[in-house]
Amino acid sequence: MKKISWITHSQYDIPLPKNHKFTSSKFSDLYKELKTKDFYKNAVILRPDKASVNELEIVHDNEYILKVQNGTLSEKEIRRLGFNWSEILSNRSFLAVNGTLLTCKEALKNNIACHLGGGTHHAHKSFGSGYCVFNDIAYSSRKLIKENYVKKILIIDLDVHQGDGTAAILSKDREIFTCSVHCKNNFPFRKSKSDLDVELDNGLNDHEYLNILRQTLKKCMDKITPDIVIYDAGVDVHKNDKLGNLSLTSKGILERDKLVISFFKNKFIPVATVIGGGYSDNKIELAKRHSIIFQAVDEIFN
Ligand SMILES: [Zn+2]
Image (tube, rainbow, N blue to C red; front, side):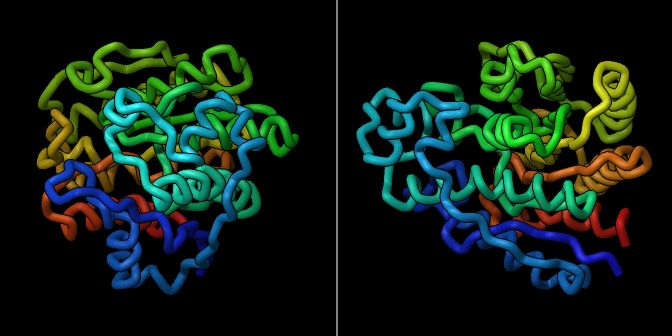
């Protein structure tokens, strides 16, 4: 039985007003859901430490990081972010970036590792956006390169929204290839340019989606031979997602995740997974959707 590292923290949840589109308890809900699974026995739970201001400067402006730390974001900045500032939000933002970095380091050791968070891909260099404070994917990628863990990285972002912050921050990083597969008619309406963008029409179903994904993975491998893949397994591609416009079923998402995980496992390339977006008024249903990537990983590795 292969043990699989899961990275999480008890302080990931975000305090939000009732009726907020983002599920305040989604990180602890996911952990609770995963505890009920058979494959929970194969998990090794690890917790990240907070990143420092200095470390975050590898991707974000010092001024912006300090505003998040001190709670001095302007009203306009708060609106763009979509979250009110709180000490808890600030704290979890500094934790979660290192959660993804720790997931990558575990993946390099064990070929696979899963973050019970991460995928805050709308965060830009000097501002937060779309419920994303700091960009964990860009941060982890740059850190891994700078600290000589790897030479080349592939980012596969399958959240229904474009990874605009990641693409913009990493646009000049030639050793990091950014690929975003997303719904064309969805947030962000002004898109950035990833190294490979695949735009999908509304209402795409499982079968059509999986065909496009197969071709996309091959295209990425023509462009880069990565030492690690960071995989954003956003579940807002689900047909019942509040903010997605696609028509994937839970079974389709499981197939999607197994396709990505097995594709790189067969090539002996480590994969670090992050959960990305997912929106539902039913928090149990949402936790079940986010648990799919963990199931997929267990099915492929065990
Ligand atoms: Zn999303």
